[in-house]
Image (cartoon, rainbow, N blue to C red):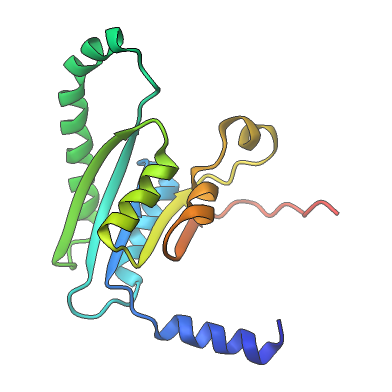
Length: 167
């Protein structure tokens, strides 16, 4: 990309205001970076931030669902409590902050669908930056969100010791 075009794209991005921001969190340290970045994103008056946690639930057969339902209310209450702690720690100066908890066996798809349904302008999320076999086996929710999101996505990860790139 020529330098002039790169500068033009960067300038346009700097001028864009994001009014409806979704912060997807798994409560990891990396996702706390995403929550902490939300107040730094230019949004102007009326900026809305939604903190979303997707409870990753494996596909269950109907007989197991009843057993799972008993503990689900306690889990949902604990998740909402943690989301509210994040709100008070990082987002206290933003007036319009909502929280959402969704159960799903596919967190990346759920984040993208939620963003589309809510008219989100920007998704913020953290990543642990797994590589190699761990990434292959576990996959990357962040990578799948970046590929399928209906809006721009900003992925943040913790600063780690620099490792050289493979040729």
